[in-house]
Image (cartoon, rainbow, N blue to C red; front, side, top):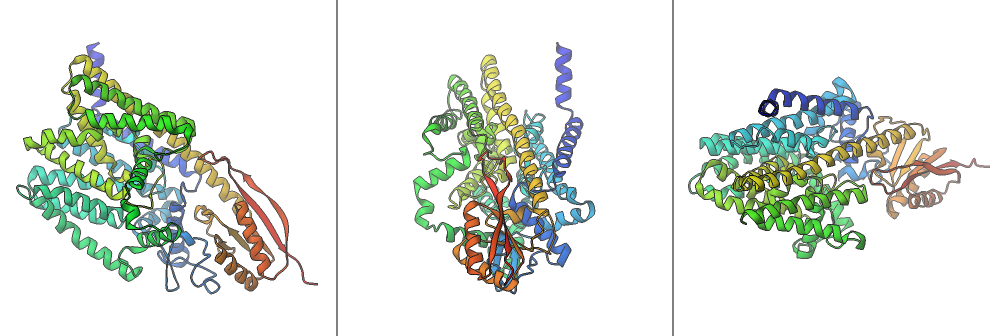
Length: 589
């Protein structure tokens, strides 16, 4: 028995095996999913459109629009929702660095090349994460790379074309250099951390909020470790100033295209005020959605399991940090109860878990960190100081995300909060280590079984996630195939359809019509283009709109065909379908 135990320990500690296994798993999964040559989200498709625009027309940021003379403001541009409109230029709203780099690999290796940066970012996150855990001398450091690589959404976002694994890598790298700054009392290491945060802003502006959180969390170090906030600031400021200058030059605004377009678009659709942002009930609602995946006041059928998840998390948060051994065991067991409820929610809805803790229940112990660091920070050990900084930084970052009235990034695991995932996993592991160390033999076994249950549920969710992604990409592949078969000179939609298409054909004029003013503009365009056929793909209400636009164009069209494009088994199981309608111009007598 002892020999088997020794072999198991050696197996777990075999970093070379873990590295090889994760490289093969993540790499082969990315190749397998890329066979569909489509995207999980229209956000990804819009970035791909930037790459195609650069290849076909030499402009990465300013997307080509063949009907610019008919629609000078881009009101019905096929990627209208993903543009930042300014004085006749059709700027893609996303920052160009990620599409620029991934576009290089696309030119070299085709569609599969788009996955290289996400895959390398995911593997890099795991490597830096392990090095951080090793420097912290965590007892669970040999297990943690497996946990992060297999049982968290890092796995999912490392195998598809999106920038979230790169965001996690940036966070892990910045955290690593903060730790080195604390260990070596090094101003330069802190400056490197600030530089990493600054580079992150060129990927996504959420790193502006993350840096502010990290900087404010380092202010308690002013007395004995003032080199940390000083270094962070020195490394960050030059890069953020360059970012601001670039935004002013390119987009005409400090926040750039993505932030600017989102504020304008969302405020137009759902106007908000400072009172709404600070309203406690609305804040609680957003927090529940982002953390647990459901509003507080849901449908009657779901209130009980949602309530149990919330109560389970609350009890863990309250008791794990300071309670005695018995209550600590009870609290950890309630943590697995919360994990079970999260699994029940998924099983009932079969939809993507939107909440951070719903998709990754293994993070639940991290909620106890505020009480734990109060005990260890006073010892002035580097791990205690680092975890105190990390807990403050993640809490402030989450606060900045949750006060956002636009409820951003709600997908598999609350995408924006996932930027902090590597640090959150470290916090959860540290919380478990601190609590398990204070338990006796049977209590420790019960606690480890409970934590193992949380990890198991999290691992199961990621398996479900891969299946969900595969179904979604298969849907996108079928969509691309059917749209490519449409030969009409004009195609209209009222959905984000165009951002999901990978074809680069410019022979077909495509438009998005969503409002009454869009309908009037389309009528004007139809009068000038005078196409022989117009095809609509979208919702039933959208078909009614296109019929109105064709009538207003004062050209006689007849509806030749109207049918479902095909029955959609949508990834969220909503049973919806896209309609296909073909209108043919009636010859003049």
